[in-house]
Length: 180
Image 1 (cartoon, rainbow, N blue to C red):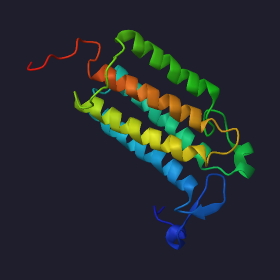
Image 2 (image 1 turned 135 degrees about the vertical axis):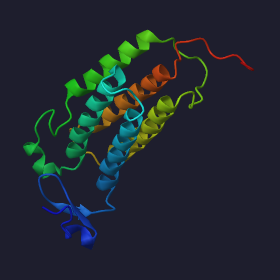
Image 3 (image 1 turned 30 degrees about the vertical axis):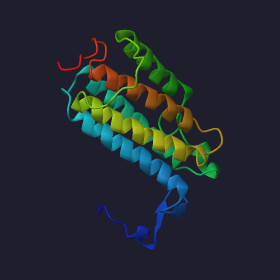
């Protein structure tokens, strides 16, 4: 089996469960940006110990993003073919993110000042992924099918990534003093 089909040589791409659209369509931008976020999460994951709590959480999120991309890449006429949690974002997936946000928030103190990313490489990569997720969210607002939970999922995911970055940067420790 070859990886290339040549079907996209005309500037179109296939959608999940059928149909084609132009590669520069807003819908393609939206799920393409989710793909970009997933790649940054993979880069962050490459920095952590395999099997660690963060590694397991990132793998789960990356798997969720496959579901989200399928959800976004399905036109309204084919949405009945989507399967909850497999190709359709669910309320339970969003609730799962909230559980992680709450658990990580309990481990650290809330910051009152703006955070300057870059205290750790992993934290910085999570912040980059967060900004890409925010872009995907903005793009999805106008392109997600009616009833899709892609936008709420992305909104919650950006919150989780912010929380994860602070956790990885050790923000629960006292702020560094000037000159130290």
